Image 1: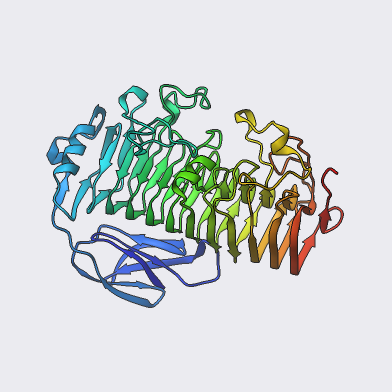
Image 2: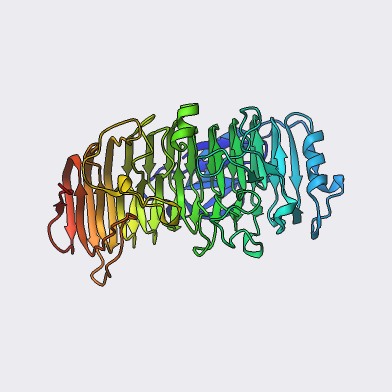
Length: 501
């Protein structure tokens, strides 16, 4: 058992075992008093007092620690927030935030706080008590608009391009040392709004998120329940040193573009012990479109994803499709994928370029169940009605390698069990002028659903269906299989196809 995070009022712990996400049920004792039962490998304890010594006992293991200090506890009700779910509490809560001294905690007791957008500052804690709900307003005109650019400073960004978008519920700019913790709920209320009417068409400005940070660091998001986001749920942008622990992120699978967590041009991020079930990608790592990457040259690096449960989504761990700045050193360990369309999904295409490359991606000790295609790398990504229909993008004929050609490096998949596969074990589609570098499978089991139906494993212009296929490859330099089992596939274990001549 190890400590992941300590704040003034919480601690997060990780149990040491070989099981993805879940453990056998166990009791948690705080100073020898029973606190709760849990069955997850990552657990958090709240309602602690600041600057206080504690002992935590789990399964006869004992950890002693001291909570962080805190300068002041500020109850938002003292600033006349009504928490009735009817009255707009935005200004009152913002007043509490802005007037709070350094290292204070803004406390939300049980209630429904109707808000538009809140802006946090450095060196504060936000504490949401259980049954405290921050509820988003349904009229988009109640939200500020973040301009794409003012004198070359970017406030708003939308899918890798600096454009005007509506503010998120929680916004952080150029700040540090912020904790957002507790067992409360941040509810975007998008299902009761018009955010998803013609959602691919800009309406005044592009949609906001539930959480957005820009140029910020040392942020901890712990225990919070996120739901019904207008678009991506948690979007750290150009932000570093972030811990996202024990959160629950739920958007209906009918809600498009509601990714769970989207690190974007960001580094040193830990995503630990979260439950994510959404209408798009569970985690989508990004690094900007080509123009944005050329301007800032910032990659997404050093991201640890461990002990999470991904239950629904287009992909569990996804790169792109805006990844021109590069994505490197990604480690996915002890995660459980259930009913996602894909496990790993990489979306790129000609035009994304290689200002940064995709490299050193490692999956260890994961389980995938009813994942239609566990591993997908697609360098011909078709963005649907947004574009990608020109031959330059989808042609499998050799194109001249240039600045707009994406580059994909090395992947290792170790100690993984994939059950109830439907479409294919893997689909890897490289470009003839830029092959996928190397793919290595070690101790991997592919078990197929004998009742599988055929379907589309990737999004490309000239699409094709597969059913119980092995590893389907196009333009891969090196693929290595060590102790890999295929049980129930149709045809060869590895299918190598050739592009157009």
